[in-house]
Structures are given as C-alpha cells and as structure tokens.
Image (cartoon, one colour):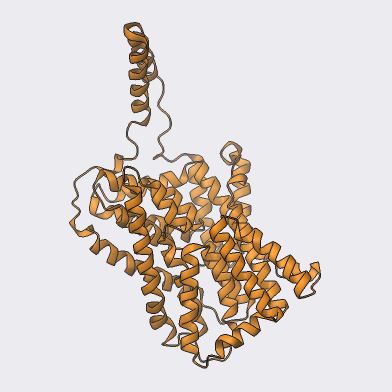
Length: 454
C-alpha cells in the first residue's frame, strides 16, 4: 500500500473516530500528523509543524475572545432584544429576526455554534409560546448563522479565504459570502412557507416576552414552597421576605445600554471598519480591541479567555496541520490527480460536494472544508472548473447541512427546544437534514460550478 493511500485512510479513520467517539477531531489530527509524518513519510518535527496555521490560530482566538467579552457584558443580549423590538411585536417577522440576528453575529466574527447557542434558546421559547413550528424556528436560526458565516471577517470566511490564499487559488471573498447568504436565504424562504410561516399572525407584544418577571416568578415559587413546608408561620415569613425583596432595586435591564456595552458595540464596528476599509488583520485587530475592553472593564472580561472557542481552535489547527503533512508528502497532488483522472471534471466536482455534505452532517464543517479544498487544487489548476465557484460550492455544501441533529448547530437547536417531544423533533431534524444533504450539493453545483464562475 502506498504512503499516500495510507495517509488518506488515516484521515478517514480520524473522521470516523471523531464522529463515533466524540473525540475532538483536531486532537486526533495532531496525533495522526505525528504518526503518519514520522512513521510513513519520514518527516521531522519541523516539517510537521510547517503546516500549522498560525495566522488562522490568531484569527480564531482574537475574534472569539472579543465575542466572549461581548457575551459576558450583555452586549449580545442587547442586540437580541433590540432586534425583537424592531418588529413591534409582529409574530410573523420573528423567524426572520432570528435569521438576521444569527447571520449578523456570525458575520461580525462569532463562531456559528456560539451564535446559535445564544439565539436558539430565545427563538425556540418564542416558538413554543406563539405556536410556531420549532423546526421552522430552528432552521431559521441555523441557516441564518450559515448565511452570515462566510463574511470576510467571519470565522468560516477567514478559514476558507486563508486556505485559498495558501493554495494560490483565485479567490473572491465577496462572491463566497454572497453564495452562502443567497443559498441559505432561499432555503429559509422555502422552509418559512412550507412550515406555516405565512399563517403566523401578529399583535402580541413580543418585545417583552424574554424580559418578563424572572425574579418575580422565582420569588413566588420560593414563597409557595416555604408556605407548604412550614405552614402559617412559614407563609407569614415568606410573605414578609417577598415584600422586602420587592423593595430591593431591580437588576439592571438587559435591554439597556451602559458604557461597557456601548464600548463593545463600538469595538465591533471598529473591527468591521479596520478589516474592510483598512485591510488590517482580523485576528490581531480583535485581540487588540478585546484587550482594551478588558483593561477598562476587567470584571466583565475575567472569564472571557476561558470562553474562547478552544475546541474549535484545536479542531481547525489540528486538521490543517495534518493537511500540511499530506501536502508535504505529496498526498494532495496524488489524490487530486486521482479525482481528475476520472476524466470528467464536472463529475469530480459534484462528488467532492457530496462528500463534504455527507461528512459534515456528522462531523465538523470546518474540518471537512480544510481537507476538501486542498484536495480539489490539482484539477482546479487544469482550468476547466472555475476555482471561485468550486470553492463556494464546497463551502456551502459543507456548512448548509449543519441543521442535522448530529452536527453541533442541530444539536444545540434540539437541546434548546422547551416543551416539545424531543424524539419527534429529533426525527424531524434528521429527515430535514437528510433532504438538505441530498438536494443542496447538486443545486449549488449546478448554480456555481457548471457555469464556470472564477
């Protein structure tokens, strides 16, 4: 068996183990890079570490650090409530608010699962309260996150654009962003129509649904528990305690701006301007802004470092380091020649799109993107397939399937749905995810690859 085939089989084993054993794929990839590099390719440590993506490491750490501070000081909560107030309580617009909100969060640098984790609990609570299909609301949240997920300053966008640059492929950051946005917007529109979005009626004061009486409800529950446990004397004591609690100052409203939140919003705007207008590095800019916020409000950012998406950082760096080993030992060229050897570049490209979709539905989207794009380099170099369209098709195919309950985003939606039959909801997500896997890669291949964009 050739060394190239062994290295590809090891990559398959990494994906299988990561999917079935819940082990971080990046950690497995680091171990695989060491094992294959040393034992199969006879590479030394310096050659193995040559593939470590230092620039992407800084981007991931910097952007997620800044976003962790925004989450800790309540800026993300303010964004949620401000977006809901904009619709004036019209329920029919709420699914689209969730789509836009998660899209905006990922577009400015939030990791897709982080944005879904923030918005999904609120979105699914609205779904239950106002009898909106939880599948509709969950799909809108996930597709919104993926719709904004390939902006030039986003995590996914930075990863794919970095790979494209590293592989010396023609790139178009705006085309990549718009491809993902349009595909997910169209899917969201179809889901909205099919699952009852047009039947939703407005009139409720949705803007206050999240804020209502958490502390009062808790106090009443405690009063009732005390009364049942201690009798009449307990009732009097609990009533007195409740009256005293009601006279205490209310906690700060999450919907109000304070200096820390204003500064954080300004930092997010500054990040966008710095990257888009002045072409500054997104990672270094994010770390600088995060450090400034930490220096001014250390109490809000004390736990921010621990909230950096370290599993994602490990995942991406590990997979790309292993891909670097594959490149060093010639596996990528060997595999690319094998795919292009089919003799039909369009067939090769659609097969890669389906591979990305199927694997990503059960494993990591960023991991599969990091592996597939370099594999497509040799037949892209032939010029028969447009690189811009192919990269966009691979990126969309590998991320749009994250509605699967086996993926991180789909699992977050499933976990965040209160008061639903979880087994039924799981089956709905699984069927919906299967339809997306079966249909979308072919559609994006027809729309982006066949015309030869790029």
